Image (cartoon, rainbow, N blue to C red; front, side, top):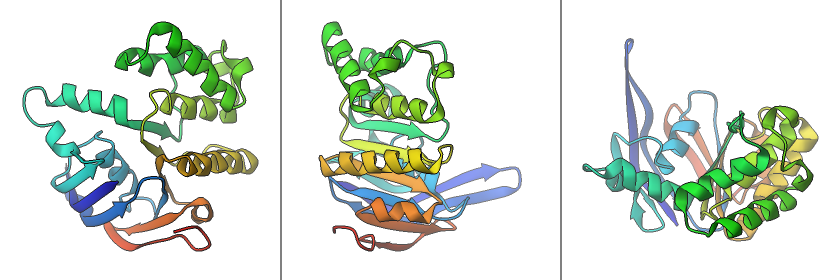
Length: 235
């Protein structure tokens, strides 16, 4: 379970203080696909970054599967502990894929597994190939990202996010650069992953994504203005 308690984030800017999140409270049970919707600047990406430990809250807490993410980053060894926790617990999928351009599709998957070191080298390669097979792009394993289509690159990015079998998957506008058919396929895959027990959070401004979700949270100006089961989806 992920519990968000009175979460706040304040950014200092030349124009003055900017409050990206203003006391957000949210509970996300395991095995849910949560669609976080709202206009640009509503706080969607900030929320995902705080849950994933990519940034620190100004106030409040993020408790992910019993771990206070903010406390992990405290002290002299904080960044090292936080990086290790992210490697084990969180997979990230981004709008612009963020694959390493000089590594093949297979090598992009091996990288996070090499960093964590939880599997022997031979097992890492088998797992990476199995994930590419599941994504339907095993035949693209030896290609660099530039040789892949946008949809193929996003499939590699999702496979990379799953490399260390994390319980949490965070996707920030994952369909923003995809055509409608490929986007539909990606969202169906996210739904399947949630059905298999992953906790999946998708930040998006596209309202129709909510039909794939089992839970929906709507942000406006850093405030949670709606939270509940998505209409027509299981609760």
